[in-house]
Length: 266
Ligand SMILES: [Zn+2]
Ligand SMILES: [Zn+2]
Image 1: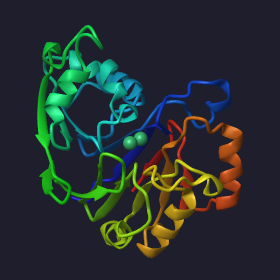
Image 2 (image 1 turned 90 degrees about the horizontal axis):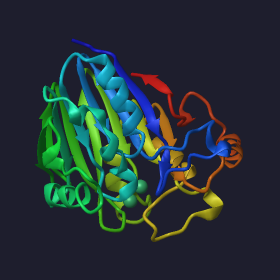
Image 3 (image 1 turned 90 degrees about the vertical axis):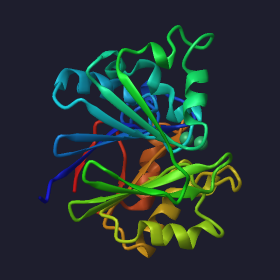
Image 4 (image 1 turned 135 degrees about the vertical axis):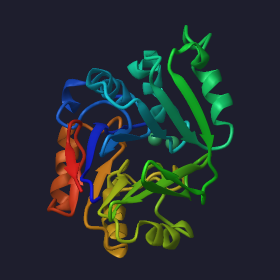
């Protein structure tokens, strides 16, 4: 069956939340995007945007399996786990996917002395799935493929295929050097490429493990992606600064800058 994919943006920031009045147009939460297909929800990263998503999922009821694909464990990608309301529903199964040591690291991070509750205290069922970049696996009718991002400490890039559609999620990745040809192949033919636009082109800092919208557009063209969605903006980047970058990028149907609440259908 050719299901519609509904992609929703819940968090657009990298490194740290930015809940300031001069950021409310794009949003102040850190990385989190959901994909609904059929009755299933896949969540890409668990930044603070996961918290409002959790409220919507709890209110929606219905199917009780959630799959959260984590690019890595830098704090901007997991901070929303502390306030994810589905953890408090005993009928919910939450599956977390990430790199080596996933369970041990999350159980350290979420628990005393950093937080009053530990992962094992939540009433929901929690499953951990360690993946190595390069692995692929099936997930509720989707095929998930992975590759290593060029990022300090490593990151995992995800590609989701199913229903004749392809979504590539590539945050926290530097688009230079040997990773670029592999990344182009990985993203080839994507209906949507979600990209790390942490830096404005004039501020790019090689070695920091992030990229620019300009590199995202080049990659999107090389990979023949239909649309590129820019996100993971620097926490110090105001709406005004982002609007200037949007003008430079010349947004059309193939290039969009993410805003919290934005929905895209594939
Ligand atoms: Zn990040
Ligand atoms: Zn990172």
